[in-house]
Amino acid sequence: SQKIEQNSEALNIQEGKTATLTCNYTNYSPAYLQWYRQDPGRGPVFLLLIRENEKEKRKERLKVTFDTTLKQSLFHITASQPADSATYLCALRGGFKTIFGAGTRLFVKA
Amino acid sequence: EAEVAQSPRYKITEKSQAVAFWCDPISGHATLYWYRQILGQGPELLVQFQDESVVDDSQLPKDRFSAERLKGVDSTLKIQPAELGDSAMYLCASSLADRQQAKNIQYFGAGTRLSVL
Image (cartoon, rainbow over all chains, first blue to last red; front, side):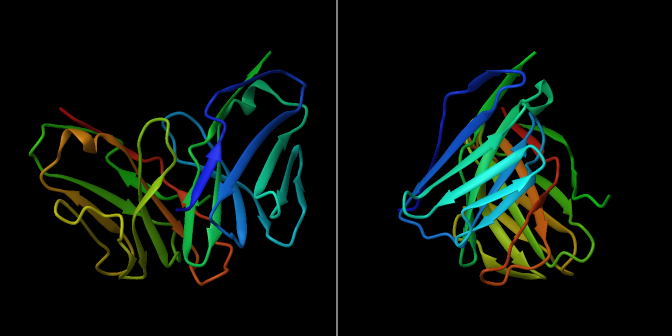
């Protein structure tokens, strides 16, 4: 069955450092991979989308890579700030379906 | 900026009671989704509408859950009777279109937190 794996352990980093979050998937060939941010008690908010034929996408301090051979996406936040503390979800899009990972909780300490 | 509206934000009910959640998507969004999110997990799709038609309800527990989008705009999700295991966040999302290979960027509401006692 299709499976998405994100680090279940929280990621703690110091302000100013680069945060790197991982999304691995199996038994799936997504056309798109998306990253969402979710704050406690709120709905997810779309951040970035990358297509299967793209290797890398950037938006301000965010960078996403997509390796369809490794079946992995990496999500980077450079010059991290305490305001970046949240849960980050990856979502795979193929056909008519979008499936979400469980997310990784990021804490950025001042 | 346009938002997906959901109500109520919080709902406490006793098991075996009926509950209903309401969602108003962003104007012009043809596709509407209901998700259930258990704490520590990702959103799980319950039902997807394209306009007023259901296109995917394979994960909807149809013995107790129902959803409708009669005029293809706002939507209601109902649970009857509620069970203890239904305690979760219920999220509504909408998107412009859901054709195959489309970007399908989803815009989420703030959700309804359901507690079943």
